[in-house]
Length: 198
Image (spheres, rainbow, N blue to C red):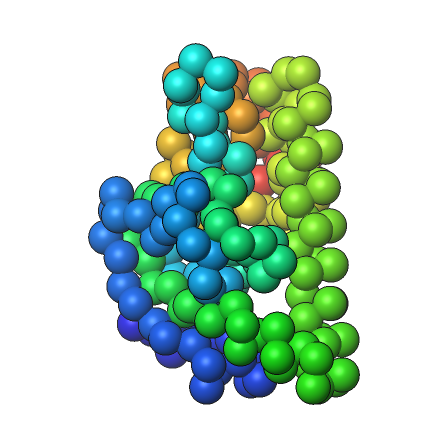
């Protein structure tokens, strides 16, 4: 694994057990005992539940550098299923040890609060994006909120299909939208990245 991958906060490194997962493997399944909080060091993990007709509904795609299943810190069972969508390196922290650390170390507790708050802000931004009706508006919102520099360059962390899931679109709708926006000179696609042309 590369040395540039996101790292766990120092206070958690000694508690974590790392494991690699292949695409399609489950880190955990809905209803299983929630014994760990997980940190995604590399790859991508999709969290999903099931709809009223038994259809699978993706509720979040965890990216490298994010914690997931952090709500399990206060739950007996996982409320969703986490399946690997890109080869992943996952660091698992026992929930009981994390709770104990939060109780005895106020400095770490504030660090944890900052981490969870940042992830909550990111989740709210993604929800805001999904509330936009048009595919073009969602693409533009993504670039404006998560892109960097003057052109709002967004390096895609996964495949176009992964991006479609993030945007709440079918991959066909995303392909059509990107092609149309590029043709009209609104965006530029280059080496796995998107950025605004104007």
